Image 1: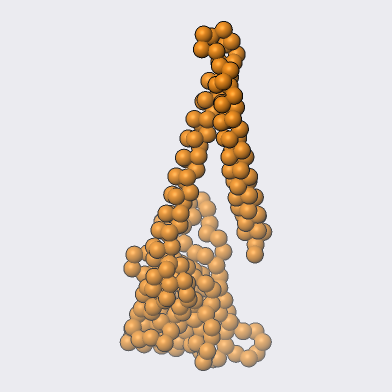
Image 2: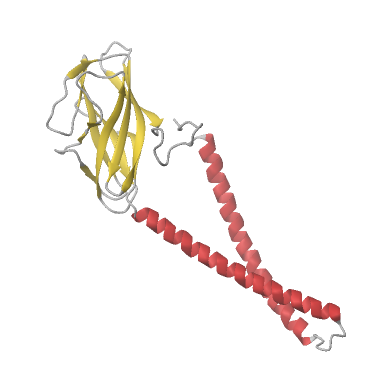
Length: 245
């Protein structure tokens, strides 16, 4: 966990704890105001000879009304937050979850379904640096253990897409379509930008790296390079900012 994530979680716990303490204090204050209003009303002077007592009664009444308004606002906010949380849970949404499990030389990316419903997703290689001959972007990647361009993910679970196969001396991208991709040589490093999308949800992007092994065993290492947002895509960094890595 990063330092900023730790600080954010700590502040969240403190704020929620303070919110609960504030609720308890509000309840105690409300009942105290009601008791005060009861005793003040018994000694109120309708003829106006004791202005201070009447003023106190009026202030207590205003405080009770304000307390009721605050209570209504809290209930509405809690209901609204629950509705927004449920709507976010039901809305199709994806996120990248690093590198998938490697088997038989096949390197994969892992995608998580953040919604409760199963959905079909597509992983697309949108950019590769340096360019690879025979691999034109956008290049639809192959869903793991499936034919075609789309793979399914159960709600709340993970799915993977095959990116390339490592032959130790060369590499080959794995397309989702029947059109094959030629093998290409291993260089020191390739940078890949991969997009995951599904029907009804915004696309998400991630940066990955293919790095040549330096231990003499041949082949490459496939690593997660962090979040990436193309310029102008909704949800990305504002102008002048950079996406987190």
